Image 1 (cartoon, rainbow, N blue to C red):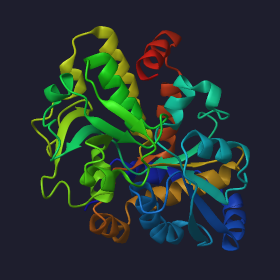
Image 2 (tube, rainbow, N blue to C red):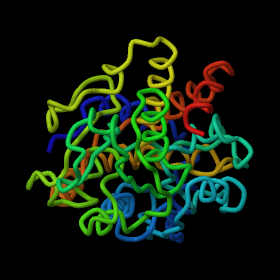
Image 3 (cartoon, rainbow, N blue to C red):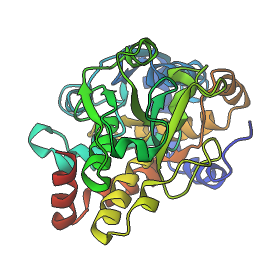
Length: 334
C-alpha cells in the first residue's frame, strides 16, 4: 500500500509549524506522558481495530515517543461531550469520535454540549462511503425490494450514521426499512442468525466488521451513499441516482460531508497550539509509515488520510449549513 500522495506537501508544511523554541518543551512534555486515545465504540469493532493499529505506530512519530493506549468509551454524542467538557486539555487525551459528531451538532443540537469547530481536528485517517446492505438470506436482494417490503435493519443508535442513512432512504426514496436501535457489537451475529436482515455502514468498515462477508458474497449491497458507484458493488445505485428532486439531492449532498470525519482524531479545545501541531504532524507521518500501511492492509482496513487543517475546514463547512437545509435534513432523519 502506498502512502496517500496528498499528504506529502502537507507534511512539509507541518514540519515548520512548531517553532524551534517550543519543540524542546513539547518533547519534554510527551516524554513522560501516556496519551489516551478515547474511542467512541466498543472493543472489537472497526473503530477499535483502526485505533489499535494506529497507536502501534503513532508514538514513533511523536516528540518524546510517549506511550499511547486505547480507551473504549462507547457512545456518539456522549463521548464527544466528554472530550469537549471533561477530558484534560493538555494534549494527553485525544479522541476518535463517531463520524456523525459534526452532523449531530447541526441536526440534534439539544443533545450536544460541544462546538465541533472548536475541537482541534488532528486529521482523518480514511474517507467514508455509506452503503445499505442486507444479508444474503434476506428476500431484499436489490434496492427496489425495499420499496415493497419491510426489511428489518439494525443500527447502533438513533444518532448513528447508520440510522441517518436508513431514515433518509425511507423519507426521500420511499423505502420501508424497519429500523431497530441497540445493535452496537452484535449486528453481525444478529444478521447471520436471521434476527436482522441488514444494516448500513461505511463500505470501508466491512472488512473489520465481518471480513468474510465481501469475499464470500454474503451480503447484498442495495445502495451507495456517495458521489459515484463503488467498484466492489458496481450494480448498486447511488442514492443520488434514485431521485431527481432538488431538495432531496441537497440533503444527500450535505450528509455526504460526514466523510471528512469518517475516522478522524481530535484533541479537546484549549490544547496548546504547539502540541496540536505536533499531534497533527505525527498523524500525517504515521499515515505514510510503510509499517503502519502494512498493518492496515493485514487488518483489511483502509487509509486515505487528510490533514488536520483540511479536516478542520471541512467541519466548519458542514456546521455552516444554512438553517433551511438543516430543517430539511432534520425532518428527514427524525
